[in-house]
Length: 208
Length: 208
DNA sequence: TGTACATCAGTGAACGCGCGTTCACTGATGTAC
DNA sequence: TGTACATCAGTGAACGCGCGTTCACTGATGTAC
Image (cartoon, rainbow over all chains, first blue to last red; front, side, top):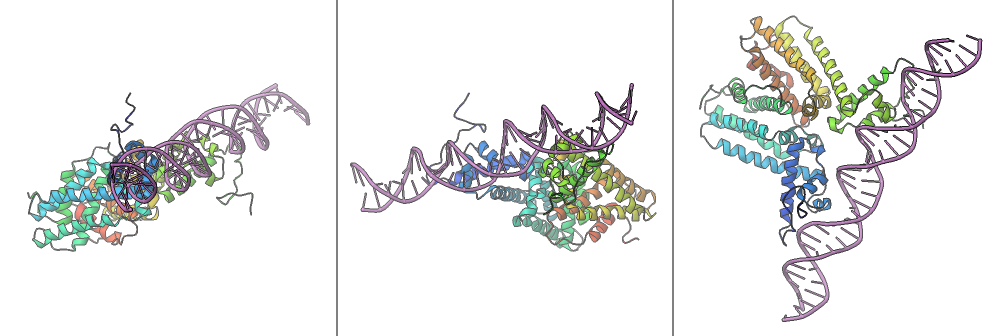
């Protein structure tokens, strides 16, 4: 049996001088992995994170004030990564409708790949305990994407914020149902998203 | 200071012979109240329930095999009560569209009144750990309500199951967003539900 | 009518566990003189 | 070039807490004879 390494597999040495921030990144990465597995912010223990990183529990306090600060930092990185992925997906086409579709679908597939993180980000009780202002960016960008479709005449002119909210609600709803009851036989997400886009936003059906 | 009563206020005496089941109902009631406050099934402790009921923690085991069995029993009663409320709301009118609207709105207002229970019922990790077959009834009845509108010619004939799923997803989505971030300025639920009914189901707008 | 016994509705002490957090500490590496 | 000192990146023991669950038990009430 390998004595030099613990549960997480790779042995951790002390970081060189000036590189103490590396540990912070490692802690956040492990926290994100565990949060995705647990699908519940309250279930994540600081000690479990430390154990998995391969450090003493007390070392977490070098970088984070307390458990909640750690979870919040993890969710902030999670959100940043997600935003970048959405931006990339949108960039594949210049067509406003294709952009809106790509962004919407990416959110759906990301949730499918990271159901636990999706739940923690949008449904954990941390939302009640502290507010996460960064989350608003996602909503604003969807409204921008909807507005683009209207401006280009590809969707009937309307209150973009209201339409965007309807679309986000519908997509969040089906994604939430799929994430929370993964064993039920759900219809294909693509077709449902297409219906939401045509019925709620009013974009032409089946455009590229 | 009143020594005869504990935190919950009313002193509890032993139930008379043959009435041992009363305690079971009391435990479930308290569990529901705490679940609504906590909004998280994992956060509910058997000991907290016992404390609040005014009994020894061990007494819970007389009626429930373990903590999860208690939570499941509570959610089953919660669901039963909710179903009855929905049925009552539907009964106020004979018009299929009014019925569908009433049922949909009641689910929304119920969630607003019991945000914690809504979360536990639909978003808690208990959904992953055990399945709750009774929940399917709610979905089926919505599909029935949609089908009625189609049969009466009040909505375009379509796949009622798919339309029902779209409607439930949209409503669950906006309710979930409102419940999880209660401090954000949400637009009126009635108007949004009306949009979902007209755009997703295709019922005539503003009918009584 | 009396009494032994069964049943019922609970109780109290104890178990081992993992948790968040505090505290004083270690030992390697750089820096001022 | 040597050495005292500061800084950095962490550690280990300990705290008190609430938890789920097990176990042997109590004391009131009904029932058979």
